[in-house]
Amino acid sequence: MESILPASLEELQRLRCRVAFHALKFRPEIRSLGSQIVGRLRASGRPYLAYHPGLLRDTLAFHGCAELFQDIHTELIQYRRNQMIKRGTVKEQLTVDSVSIKKNGSCPLMPEEVGLLLQALGYPSTTIIYLAGSETFGGQRILIPLRAMYANLVDRTSLCSQRELSDLAGPESPLSSDLPHPPPPKSEKELIEEWKKAGPRPRPLPPPPARPFYAHEKEGWYGWIGENDTEPDPSPIEFRRQAHRLLWDALDYFVSVQADAFFPGFHNDGSGWPDYSSLIMGHRLYQTPSGITYRPDRKTVATLFENVSDHLYHPPRNWTMAARQHLNNSARIEGIKMSATMSKPASFLAHPLPECSCRTAKSPVVQPVKDKHGALLFGGEEDCPDWMVRTLALVPTKNNEPQSEDYEGELPEDDPSQDTQQESDRSDTNKSEQDEEMDPDD
Image (cartoon, rainbow, N blue to C red; front, side):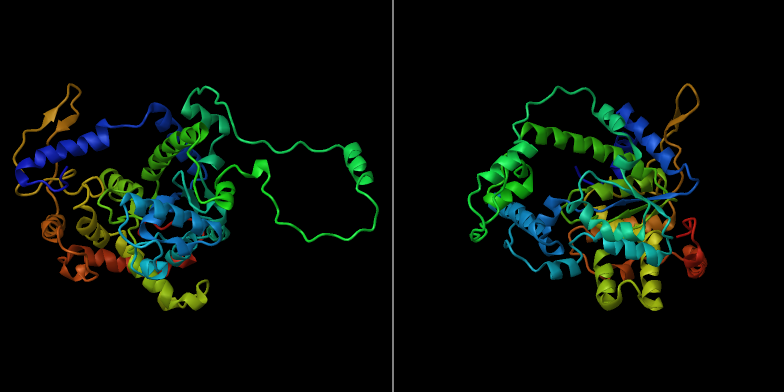
């Protein structure tokens, strides 16, 4: 379906918005548990920030971001990329320069980089961060730097009991597991008997052979990749885990939309389809447009980190101010304008403005419709602000043009917002002194 419709079909676009954001709802169990998680996050009286890393194996393999990781994780990404090349999904070579790809903004931000950016924004170490997403490639190991900076890094497993999560999936029939089991431990008597039968001592020791893979170590990727180059077919248990991941993604989506602030590690991946973070950002823009939603330009962020690579944890003040200004601007009108030029041609769900929220001068006149209780069902939307209308007019002209880093200069200026931006910039200088709350002006 087209993301941008002509003015004559604006009511159809508005209907699509109502279906996407109102008619389509999560299961009652997901909404109930999601509301409980939001309540537990705000039980301390402080706001919380939701963060989706975007570190998915398929995403990393598609863009060729293998060098961000080490050891066997790189082999896993290369294996999946090789599969994509054989299927024709990827037209490039198997091995690419991940450093240049990251500088181009095609790779996700690493959790360590996100932690440094949050510090530059002035978020204290006591900030509550909710980790969203059912998959974080690299596991807890990749999250160690972020957890060192922000100890209150939580997710659904730390906020919910195992019973609550299993009840979300509902009753499930047991599966016959064909996974190998670890060898049974030997008793002290058996160990003594083996020692007595070991032969005369002392005796020369043979060279140590390569350690074999025991049966219980062959479960998971570290087993098959160590023995052969072919990934095994998913087992019934793995299919069930994949179904559970869809539930966890839906649960984290609900919590992220309700968050006081949202920070995406990867969005607008250029695939032409809305990714997880972009859908959250679009839903937040429609439901709570005044909420803090950061839209970092990964190419700009990569340049910032390249300039301060020698002293990441003690950057100069001018670097901190530059990073803070970029992220604060991404959460304001400038970020919404940039999102319109990048997200709108791909999906209206990632950028539902202005059709879903207001009416332009070209919008057809529609008589408001109310239900029996007096609630407004159709029509009655307010007029769109001028900056939103002018920004939308630029989108179709950029639909078939390559994105350039000079797009900010081509966007119309929004004069009424300059005063508020200056006030917010002045408040940013004092934000680093705060140690309890997030600043809602950022």
